[in-house]
Length: 99
Image (tube, rainbow, N blue to C red; front, side, top):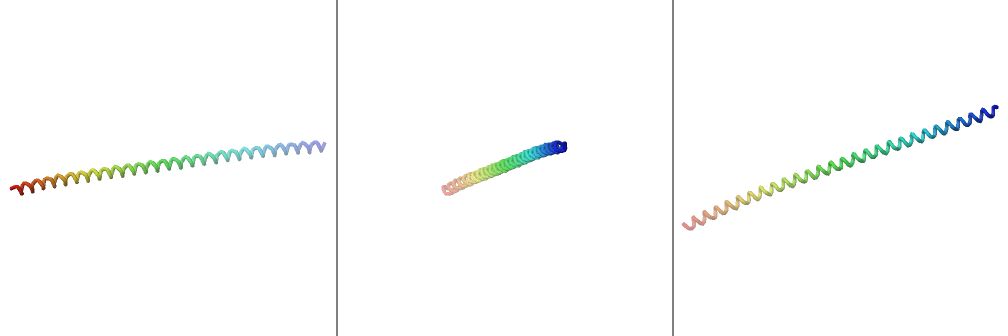
């Protein structure tokens, strides 16, 4: 009788140990899954940040290009004014020389 009781206790302890081991495995899997999700979120955030920086850089380059274009237009305008002024002066000199 005592042997049967001891055997049943032993079997119950084994079952409890197996249940505990299974719970530990489930917790470890859950923790691993949460860790993977966190890593994925971090990667997504990094990608979003990189994309944002890329867009900002492109905007800066575009603004610089527009600024350079505007400066070139202003320079061309100045050159045009100088050209007209010089032409006018040349015409006036010729007229003076003819007189």
